[in-house]
Length: 239
Image (cartoon, rainbow, N blue to C red):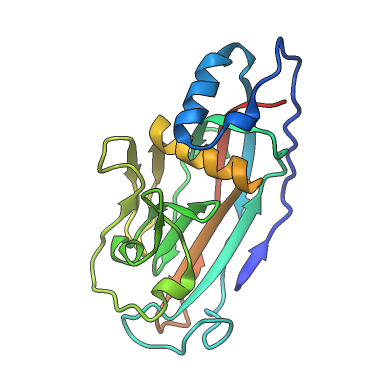
């Protein structure tokens, strides 16, 4: 995998005192997450954490590790970054609230990328600037799962077609700037999406945000992006 695994932060969520043992063994799907969080609402804890994806500059790594050689208007190369949260396996997320307005008080974060990006949580595509490519990915429980092998070599048209997980059902809202255009980004996901993500994270025992940028044939700008940072409030149950 072409990727950068950063260690810009480590967060350990520590369980607080609880008035009764939470039946984590009952968690199988999103419905179980919702039931558990409702039943044990008085034991839900909150942590605020920071995620930073460092800026990417330089040429796409064409022709290596699953990337193709340069070709105009084709997804030929990518750079993948992962920020892993150090969270215990027995944590069940009840809410995930992202604040992408920026990490500097009083300043609005402006996003810039080229050509396209995919923003993921445990490989689930939360948002992307290229919906046609997302449509080419396999799905699990109705959620698109990022896998470069599924989309490499896909032709892409000019123009923007963003993707936002849950937006069609009214469970999410996203505002994504166009490629090569500096602008703010907002992403908000409702309980249906969060519950699905929580069940997946609980069973996989990982909490990984991913940011992937792609290119076709421009060494000067493809696969690049400005620093992208945000805070996220995590509501969770822990044993």
